[in-house]
Length: 325
Image (cartoon, rainbow, N blue to C red; front, side, top):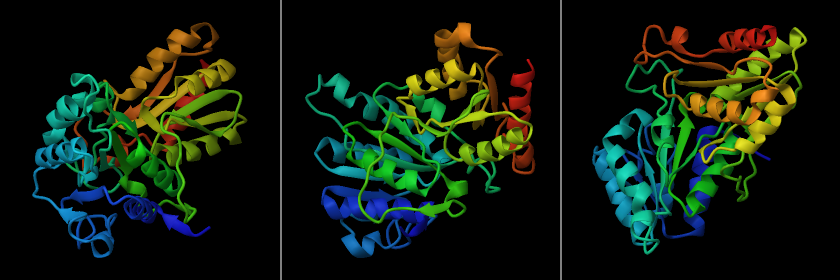
């Protein structure tokens, strides 16, 4: 299998989807000839023409409103929000229109063919308008699916699943890993299941859970823990909505401990939802309180980015603390 970075894997997935189905259309700010600010859509306009890969005005609400209209009429739009931080002007369209189209019509019409791609997260010295992790805002919205890949193989398979899914999907891409994460990726078409977590490492003492870019950070923390004789089970949630309760419950029933980590701030972060559900279903099996290792309850700081980020040392300390409780 060829090696790809995450950007190449995403571009390859878009290429396959557009080649297979002429209804697949890519659009967003600078995605055409320029290939997007990160070059995720490079050469797609050259290959499929301006009618299927094109630039939009710098109006996020308009991008998603336009995408809703296209999807409602049978197209398969893949709309790019240049940075996930820019998604908030489109919040009304996503939450009140995209998510509710099918419900409000009694299934007479829907926008299930819509996929919204957005690079999220910190680690690139982007400051507070280019570093946020907004997944929890949308997890409160029935009618959406939310997917976050951790590496190139996952990105390609999950994006192809998202484009072909019968529900609208928010696809958050960890931009810190766009070029930093590389791996073997099949050239052929394949899909990975949405709504299923993956146990990336089995262990006995503590479950460590995350998604997206945090999986790479978790792996470094687990290396430190194992040097101290701590056996960690690692889970990549992959899908925030729906999230795979069963896999997490099964793991925590075995280990009795859970550490959850994400880049977004602590208060209202999705780790709180996971923690509440696991304590309901695993209460009598828990050996210690569920720990959350997250970003801080502050705007994302440019000069203090390293202090803000939930790095491997913070996760390692949380693992040790939950074992010592």
